[in-house]
Amino acid sequence: MTLNRNLLKYTIAALILLTVAANKTYADGFPVRPGRFILSPSVSYFFANKQWDSVSHKKSFDDNGRFHSLNYAFYGEYGISRKFTVSALLPYTINSFKNDSGKFSSSGLQDIEIGLKYYLANINYKYYFSIKATGIIPTYKNNPSLGYSQYGTELKLAFAGSGHLFGRNSYFVAENGVREYFGYESVFQDRYNLTYGLTLDKNFHEQVSLSVGGFYSTSSSKAFNNDPLISANPSTNKNFAFNQVSLSYGHAFAKNLSLFLTGGRFITGRNTAVGTSVSASLNYRIDTK
Image (cartoon, rainbow, N blue to C red):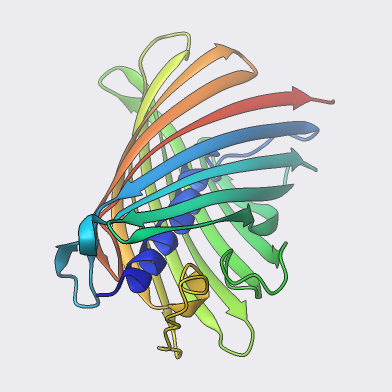
């Protein structure tokens, strides 16, 4: 497998990883009270030196290749009413691939995501069902190193709830979203995430959670561009899949300020990396009502 194809696949993995990690951190399934802002800056570091090929065989990069990606994101959500919230996500990425032959890199703003969430129903105010529609808007033009350069939409269903386990408060979030990018070659994607968490103290200052997530992407396009500047673009290869496991620790400094630290690992995949990630996110709440 060539250097360019390797660079492409690990870039895909890093970009998608940020999305999955964001959904976990923001606990998308639970209600946001009317008049509340949730502001969450985050940083994620992803690295890999192995890959799965098109038939899920694992192998190392050519010529001691190594991929690194540093991602920054800012997420905001606002409670419009008891039923509706609006959200926005703005990501920035710095990607690099280096081996014995040289180094390739790319950086810049990616796609803005604007979402509207509706809470369908609840059971005794402990279990919540919601649906979220998201619009995807590229911030770049004619820059294939930053993404698909196509507008898209996503529809996501979530089920979340709270309870007790081993005498401790617990929660879970189950989500599944389908996404479509529109253009001269459409891309269909499906992603899921399952999270279970426990509080470690009676004051809800400490918590741990375990997540299992996955991503599947398909397109009629099988073309690949060998230009190294173009090959960093995920839109040049639109067919890949992976599953990952991650562990997260959360600490509340105050009622309105929390820190989340997460480590994750890709466990299976196709046309993507055998990658490891670490991330940190601050969640800050502001009540205007």
